[in-house]
Image (cartoon, rainbow over all chains, first blue to last red; front, side, top):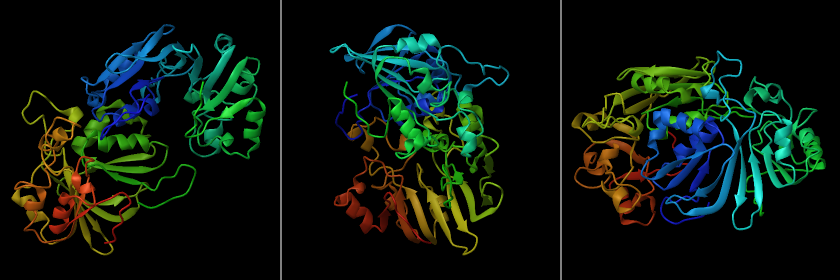
Length: 239
Length: 239
């Protein structure tokens, strides 16, 4: 969250995990260079980390594991305990158990409420807020209502269509099966949030199969026409 | 081992793990994009992978787990079973259990023979050979003898001195405690292999604390004067 100095310093000092998916938790294993770090996650995700010995490489003298309670706003603390100036509120979103934790004997794959969360991030000084939901399998009405009046929303832009992985030959599962709603179509995120008042709406977590990544694609034009921005590496947004 | 084509193709199709250290095995979790892969390792390391559910993300329909027996040359097979043209022989080298698998109740941290291996890699077509040992805690006489007459050796270049981590402020352990002999000094690798006939000797696995990384350092000059090359990102060697 702020740049520091030294042979191995890394500007990342606070991490908030939104699930236990490999793409989330494996990054921790690259942040193991002996530098202070605060790791926030739900009890469910912390249980997963605690149960797996590989996360023992995170030196407990340097890495604090801090728990998020659904619906409770917490001040994100820097390692050492000072306030970062940001506050986070976690809330459950439709999702599923991380792939490597799925229970194949159950129709919901053993998913629980805390598997996938969204985040409301507030700046204590300015009282401005943004929402960050990189994984979301569906848009129930009460979730869309949360975003009503939001100044800035980052939302799950994994795929354009539900069968995209199969059609592009990189997988066999539908997006929904992977815990992601698509952008397009009657059940897609563009339609689901069309009636919600949101200042800026930005797709993130975009899969490399998604045609919106191509600046000249009809899909990109459709998303932009619907008021969406498409995030890219190095994107900076000032709130 | 050869470039391929497609949306997510990756030129890596065969992986040989030389230990279960996080720096070795976590790479597998980034190679999980649903592409065929052959993973070679000792029984010990395969047991570690099998016991940890996170490696379940490696799709068994695509990823073959193949076992290396110490001292036995095996043809490295591409996914699908064709010969790659390369053969590998694994042999135990002084090392230790991976950090996250250490048994703190034992003075050897629960290390076993198959924890750390070196590799002799042979090209079937040309019968030329190179040796690859990125982690090695000491140089017993029988190990140095193995390399006698070698055309090309890649060797553990983690640190210059044993207390380098502490002195540079990035850690508290000695190199030896981490399973690495240093380059310099009477017990260092430069001295240990000074009397061994080796065509080209190249340091790899170089820590960012190691002064040989600096082109103008006295340590670099000393290593080069002793006949060593210092590997760098993008280094290509033709045998």
